[in-house]
Amino acid sequence: MAKKILSYFGKVENGQVTLPRRMRRELVAAFDGVAIEVVIRKKKKHRSTEQNRYWWGVVVDALLNYLRNVDPSEVWTPEKVHEILKVKFLLQTKADPETGEVLYQYTKSTTNLSTSEFMDLIAQVQQWAAQTFDLYIPDPNEQVELFN
Image 1 (cartoon, rainbow, N blue to C red):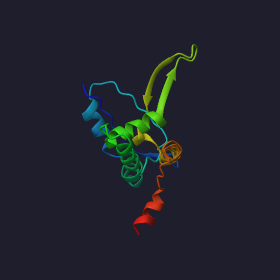
Image 2 (cartoon, rainbow, N blue to C red):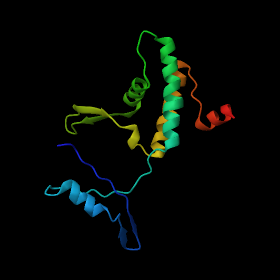
Image 3 (tube, helix red, strand yellow):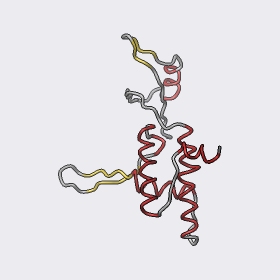
Image 4 (tube, rainbow, N blue to C red):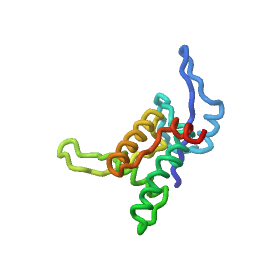
């Protein structure tokens, strides 16, 4: 069975909970007869469309062009560069708290980062690219200035 996730946004204000009217109908349609888990948490602001375009169009593209020039024998794609950056900066390690033994590792998804976490990631990549490859990656506002 495919994993189904339904996500809704609501608000708690003055002792009242406001949720979309369609929520109950969609929950019943998707999960009728199935045990479910309901998780409520404070909504965080995810990265913006502009941040996403900057990530792929400037950050990833700058590193992609650099790597294609210094290592043309490798097949470089935007997705490969994206994965390299995820492993370099978003690698998470789960260790056994008693033994310290690494149980598993995974990379966080960039799509789940908040806007501030995403900006921190970009700053880390810019610093790493400058120190490691002597590659300057401009800030988003500098891109606007370059093209105007």
